[in-house]
Each structure stands twice: as C-alpha cells, then as structure tokens.
Length: 221
Image 1 (cartoon, rainbow, N blue to C red):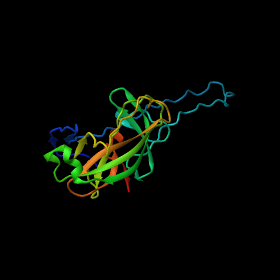
Image 2 (cartoon, rainbow, N blue to C red):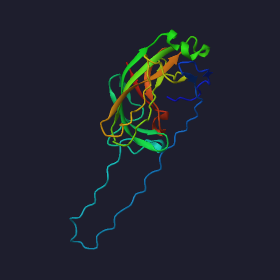
Image 3 (spheres, rainbow, N blue to C red):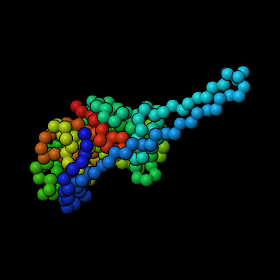
C-alpha cells in the first residue's frame, strides 16, 4: 500500500488557524546496505579452544536512513493491528531527534461535515475523522516537542489523498510531545485529523521512514 499520487489542495486559513493541503508523494524505498562481515582469525594455539566471541543481536526491523536504531523488537512493516493495540516503531523528527516510540491508537471517530467549516470552501463535502492515540517514549532519547501524525486509510484500501494541517480545538487537538518527553516511559496523548469525500475512513496508518513508506502499520476498529 503506497501513498503516492495524492491530489494537491490548498485552502485559506481562517481564524481557527487551520490549513488544508495535500502532497504529491513520490517516495522511493531504499534498502539499507548490508552490514560487512568479518571473520576472526583462527587461534595459533590448539589448546586455546575455550575462547568464544559474542555476536551483537540485530534489531527485528530496519527503519532505514529516516529512523533511529530501534530499541529491542519493533513492529514489522505491514503489520495489521486493532484499535487499542500497541506498535513499537522507529521514529525521527526533524534533523536531530531520533528514537523508538510506542503508539497505541485508542479510537478512530467519525465527525460531522460541519466540523470542517474552519477550512473554508475547499472542505465542502468532506467528513472528518479523529484518530486518537497515545505515544510513549520507549528508547529514552530526547523527543521533546516532537509531533506525530497518523494518516487515515479508506475502507476500500486506499489513502484519503487529503492531508490536513492543524487541528479542531475541542474535537481533535493535535498536541505534540511535551518538554519532558525525553525519558523512557514518558507518554502523551494526541489526535490526528483526517478527512474524506468518498469511502469512509476505516484505518489509521504509520508510514514514516523507508521501511514503512510502502508497507505501513495499520490499525482498524
């Protein structure tokens, strides 16, 4: 499942401070180069047969160049989960914040078309959906003030083609990570706003980083 070929849209900002855009993605997945292997020289002393070398364990998924080295097991690309289940994911924000987060989608709620009034005429006929989530810091790296957005997926299996920037105060507040989101176990709650003019939104997806861009993790009701 890809997010290519989204329609470009733009809407004037209103007093609510909302924007409506979409992107024309042309994501090209890139596999990480294979790690070089090295062999240890044989011991010159045949009596030295008790020595052994320990190999470092490898992560269960490679986030590619866009993510940080994962901590422990991460959820594999393409994994399908139910709302309420947790995914452990490599995460990068900006140029210097990298780590591992756990994301639990707690609800995918349908809103009313009237909720979209703040986006102006371009939003006419759109039905909003509110993807509510809990985000936890698993790796213990500094991810303060970072922000995560999950995308909505249509019931027919395709992406919405609409990217919403902003939130709907009181209905879907896109709260970013707090200042203290830098310790292992820290968490916060947020909401991603999505919308559709066609089929209903039936899933939320995480598609950040090379490993997930074409095989996102999905949550469904």
